[in-house]
Length: 270
Image (tube, rainbow, N blue to C red):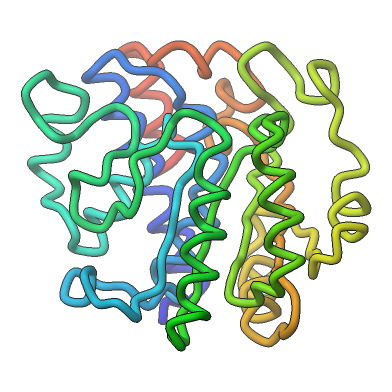
């Protein structure tokens, strides 16, 4: 188990690694990667029962990154946890002929599902959670989606399905960074009031600041204690979190940091 200071330091480190990968490969989606760092680090370091040694075990916990276009940071977390080699990742991310695709791929150790086509991760997570219950497994299934991704109707079907089947082994994490490809989520297709909507679907709803470790830890603890219904953590975050010129800046949904921007990001993060 990591203390909050260690979690923060690890989150800052993987943020920078994700930016370095994006810079080297001239890849996009850095803003959405940075917003989920604190959530993902806490989950993998302190809660997810899944290690390089148990990655094929039937009873392992499962994690699906449905917003798979933000996989650079996910890969960095997997490397920190020992699933993949960090040096190989940094050298080969998004290069032709390698398995380090720019969308999450199940070809890499520790990745459960190839994702990036939005709205697919949550339905699969429901299937995994239902299958685990039917097979008598005492594991948990986590799925992280973006708030813009909730525009996809497949998520609402899955939300209904999970509640109907009382999938209390399922934890949905919404990275509510309030932006998507075309602008602010409230202007593209407003979701609010999201927590209240999810409550009407009979979910255990927890709303937090997704950069506050006390609240993140409390939310995951709450999920572990909840019975009879699935849990959703509505995590209010900042797109581009941790780098001043990237925060709430739509440019970094589409572009990689240049040399000067990467240098400034390193100074702010590390």
